[in-house]
Image 1 (cartoon, rainbow, N blue to C red):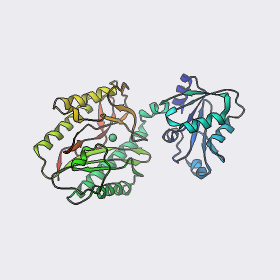
Image 2: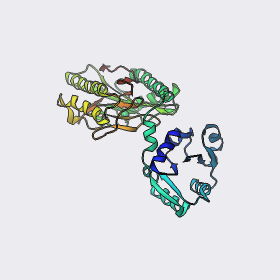
Image 3: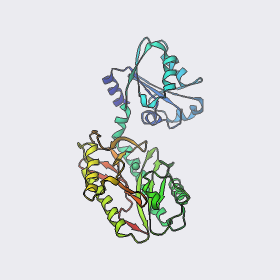
Length: 352
Ligand SMILES: [Mn+2]
C-alpha cells in the first residue's frame, strides 16, 4: 500500500480504484470473489457485498470495510459524495465497458479518470520473503504430486483419469486446488501446447506431457514434465535433449539486470543450433505469484529488466504436428546472481 501510494503521486492521481481481485487481495488480504478497493493517500476503503461481511472483517487489513447494500458502484458514489474534484486512477484492462460506463454515470462529472495500467502488477512482480516461502512450498508440493502421479501412467489409463489423480493429490496435500486446468496430453495430442485432457487412453511408445500447478495459500506453482511410455527412441532422445539444453540456457541467462527478452533469446538460440527453433511456438516463460500468469513475460520484445525476487517459469518446448510435443517447465526465483530452481522433480528423460 505504501509503495502503491508513491506511484500514485507520480501519476498525479488522488486515488486508485482497484477492481482486479488478485490486486485487491495483494493490497488488503481479501480472498472472496467480489470486492473493490479505493486507495487514497490517507486512507483505503474496501467495498464488498453482504455475503462477505464476516469474511471481510476477518481478512481485510489496512482498509475500512464498507458493505454495499445496492452494488459496489452505488457505495463508491456514496463514499465519494461531497468531493469537489477527484483524479481517479483505474486500470482499463480490468474494468468492462459496461462497468466503466456505469461508474461514469454513478460518480458524475466531478471525477477525472486517469488511466493507470500495471501499477500493482509491477509491485507484485517482485516477491517479498513471505511470498517466496509460500511459492517455494507450492512448488515443492507440485513436484511431489508429479513424482506420485507418474506411477499411474500405464497403457489403457486415460488422460482424464490421470488428470483427476493429479488434482486429487493436489488437494489431498493441502493445496486449495490446481492453479489452472491440469494438462495431460499423450501421443500426437501432446503437440497441442495447451491441450485439455481427453478420454484418449495412453498407448505404448507415446510421449505424455503433464503440465500441472497448485494454489497454496493463494500462491501458484506451474510445472511441466514430459515422459515417454516405453523405451525412448533416438528421435525422442534427441528432441528431449535439445529442449532440456534450451531450458538450461534460459536459466543460465537469468540474473538481475538482464531483460526478459534476452532470456527468451537464449532458449531460442539453443533450439536454433539444433534446427528446432521453428517448432518452439510460444514464449519461454512468465511471472508467477497470486496469478499463474503475471509480469514479466519472457518473450520476444519484452524489455522488462529482471530483478532479484522475481519468480518466473522457464518452459521451452517443441511441438511436431502428428508426432507429439515435449515441454520442460520449472519455476525459478531470480537471486542476487542467477536463478534458483523452486520445482525439483527430476528432469532427465523418463522412460516408463
Ligand atoms: Mn507455465
